[in-house]
Length: 268
Image (tube, rainbow, N blue to C red; front, side):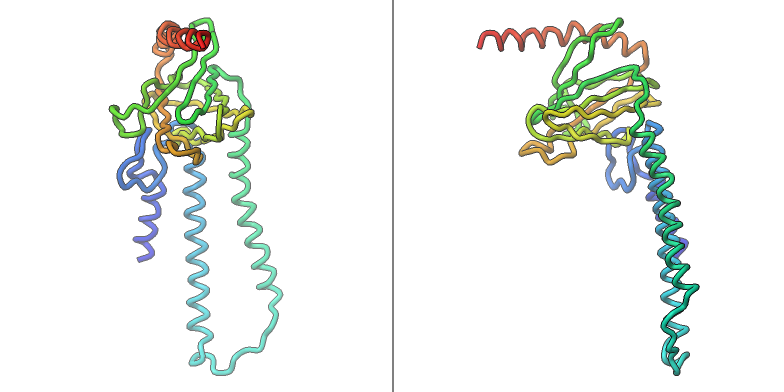
């Protein structure tokens, strides 16, 4: 029974049934990680699962030992011992050592997440009620435009796709600067291993480096209002050549939308 439980634990923690860039039916684990940060989070989580499993077995063993060793039948004359220095020292030191063993990889992971490497691409993300807006700064290959990404209910996967995807290059450090225009939102991308709050009047920052191409989906993870469930996030990771071409095309495609919005504002 213990072996079967351990096998189930390993299966549930190793990413079995986890989707690539999107959730899967009956998924029990994280989505397949596509960044180093996401892989470190998964490894840390699996390690914690096994540590908890070993501790649970140890405690269970102690309970069973006490039940059979010190029951009334096996021990008719109960001990009157009130203190045991060695046991008291052990149950103080061992938990401290366990916490230190957990803290070391945890702090290492936090250091990686909070580091500030030089960005190859910077994208400003703004949460609105209830959609996301993306702004790309002007670079030598294009850029200098912004666009909105609204839910597209006709695309699959259902309620996870948008009309305009955020596009980034593969194997490049992408820095995300996140804020909100009205209420608090949260930009969450499970395959990248992070989520970050979008707070009005505040600019939060995070970074990722996706190491494989594909389409990856996320959602707003902050309860932000009646249409909170309809704020999907779609990120398309492409090659360098495809990204440069997209920047050039976006300059034309989204410039028309931006100019139209400004013209409408001017008329009012």
